[in-house]
Image (cartoon, rainbow, N blue to C red; front, side):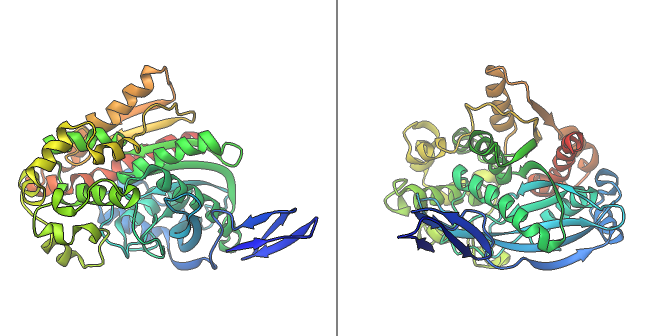
Length: 426
């Protein structure tokens, strides 16, 4: 929505509760404006939060909850892929409270990992990511805002631009703006400090966010620390390596990336059978994120080992081209999302695990750390939590250990590393 202001030297426009002032020009809704009032989802006491940590076997790692936590859902304006494209995204705000937590609080902007279901929202008291954010961060005195990204939950964007660095960053940055606008109505007092973090896809999103803030928004945000957790920061190299050495989840993550790049750039393939085998070529283009329930989604994707799943889903020639052709359209699109060649300013942690079977530590975190060091960057610390994961979970059934490693076993250890950094700058 736009207002044209003519024949005036001064105009006051009240737009969705935001007062804008302009002279002789055009005013558009600013990014991050709230679209409606925040909706409180529910609250948990310190006792309930400790019970969640205990249920996961993580009370010693998370620490005893110091604050009650209230969760709210926000809906806010943000930008789409194409220049000038305006849309919306939703997200969760976590508000610490109770006698021990009067505030004001620093604000952590957190980006979650890949989710395959379109209805997913972080504003869900039963969601595992929300559990970790509540127990490790909000219950310890951090306000948190966690975007749902474009194309999920309340967002009306027609698809999710998966692994697209610019819109990941804008969704996170606009969530910070929206959380600030929502704070007073939620009884949340912020101290002005901003921290960014994210896991898996969210690690890539958080790093893209830090890069954008330090390049474009230093006057707006006091970014004091950043923690990027198990992220695929070197997107093109990860795809090339994954074509040669298939990762756990190849039948989900790789088609999600390829079809998203096609929707973003329009030149990755002419028809799906160029890349995908039948029957997947008939429906993969618009499958993810899915409207199906988990059991139905599993039934329409290949199973087996990563190599078996890759062979079932992808044409051999397309895999070979992905692995060996530097001009492969998917690789060219992925290179635009690579996060090399910039210099982080705020204290930054890269956390991951050398045992991760999905987002390979050497291809991503180690490569980025080496890239930063090659230019003399001293603000970045690399942390490998493989030994901690092995010590706690190494006796698990090997199949479960492998399948749960990236999605459930690794996140709490890296979120704890993030909190250790944030505690130094709180």
